[in-house]
Length: 231
Image (cartoon, rainbow, N blue to C red):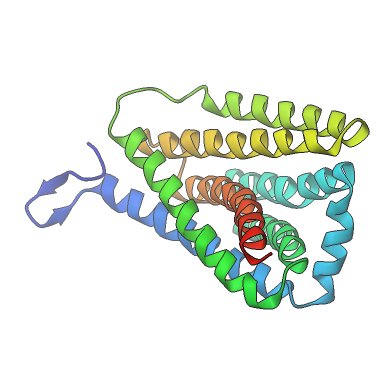
């Protein structure tokens, strides 16, 4: 039964309640992370983040340890039934994304930050909605798309490494591959919700991680456009 069907008139189906709960938790985590990155952008932490992410390899390592490590801890906690460990994992991922986001915002004027975050939130919301409609309106299996996302991430790392040593312009292609990887991963996570592959909390965290990955890359594009318009 799909998320828009009902067991009886006026009675929401179990599947629909589950999807609504997952969406609510995921949206809450995303909103909290956006607020955190904005708040950190006005603190010395943003400068530290900017220094870490200025170097491609150190930036990747920082992202993997914080966001990736947090995601792993959260999943481990859920599997073991330890909500404390899951909470620590989510907090670590929140910090990782907030650190990266604040570092991106740190280099632009304060007056531009809220506008950039607002535009980015709208664009990311549209992308998420389009992916959700495609997944829920088709019977196509996206089971292998998590593997495809890892291929994109691996390609992004390889291209970025080449760009770091050869030509920084090449690193733009790495960013495009990372963005594609997160969109592909988001597609998988939404499909997993459709198929009830994981529990509600695990699904919400997976969607949160993927949406924030898309958000971060869209934010960089939005800031470039705003800077060009402001020039």
